[in-house]
Length: 375
Image (tube, rainbow, N blue to C red; front, side, top):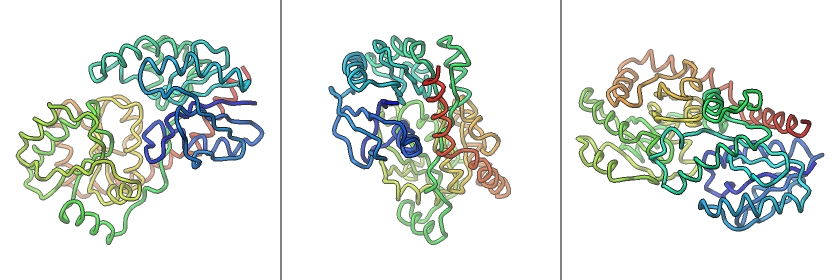
C-alpha cells in the first residue's frame, strides 16, 4: 500500500507538540511495516533525520502552508494532485487538516478543539478558517484519531461525528526525562535560580496556557509563604501580549520569575528533573504532554481540574482551578508545606507514567490505519 503522510510540521530543532507526535509514531510505524511504502509530504526543505526507513519517499509540495489562503492551496490543490500522482491508498494528516477534494481514504488526527472554546485567542482569519473547515474535515475523514476521551467527546458533541469513527490514541512521552542526580540538580539550580528551589512551567507562552494566573498565583504564594522559591517559565514568548506584561510589571516578586526562552532538549531534561514541582495549569488542553514529562522526571505535578488534564493525571497530580489564581497558589502552598504529600504524588506519577509510551501510541495509530484501509 502507498500511504501518504502530511509531515509539514516535521521541522528540525522545532518539533512542538504535533511535530513530536509525527516523529515518534511515524518513526516506529515505517520501520515496523516495510511491506508498505510511505510518502512524506513536506511543504519546505526537510532534514534527512526524518527519513526513518528505506520505505519512505520524501516529497516537497508547495506552496509553504503557513497562512489560511496557503492552507487552502496546499490541501485542496497541491495535495490531491500528489495523492493522484503517487496512487495513494491512504492519506494520514496528523495536524487535523484534510483535503476535501481528494477521493483517497483519509485519517485526521484532531488533537483538540481549543479554537472552538477560546476563539478570541486566534487571529481573525485563522479563526474563520478553522470554524469553517474543521467541521468539514471531521465529516470528510474516514476515521479520526484524537488524544483523549475528553477530546473525543468534544468532537462528537460539537461536530456530531459518530462515536465509532473516532479512536483515542494517547500521546507518549520521551524516555529521556528521568530523575536527576543530586549534583545535576545543584548545578542546574545554581545556573538558573541562584541555587533556589523552583516551580517550572514548560510550553509556549500563549493565552490558553494561563500564564497570567500562574504569575498571579506565584506572587500570592510568595506573599503568604515567604519561602525562597523561584518560578521558571521555559518556552517561547509567542503571545506575550500587553495584558501579560502589565501583570508581570505589577508583581511584587517579579525578580523571582525566570524566563529561559526556548531551551534545547538536553537542558530541558535537566531543568525538569531539577524542579521542585511542575505547575502546568492551562484553561484548555487536549492532552498535556508536560504532565507526563514531569511524571517521568520524578517531580510532583500541579495541573488543572478541567478538560483532559484530570484524565491524564488520573489521581497522580494535585488539581487546581485554573480560573482562580488563589486555587493555584493554595496548591503551591500545599506541595511545599507537606513533604509527605509531595512524595506521595511523585510515587503516583511514577506508576501513572507507565500507562503512556510511544510504542503503544504507534501501535494504536497503525490499528486505525488498518481499519481505514480495510473499510
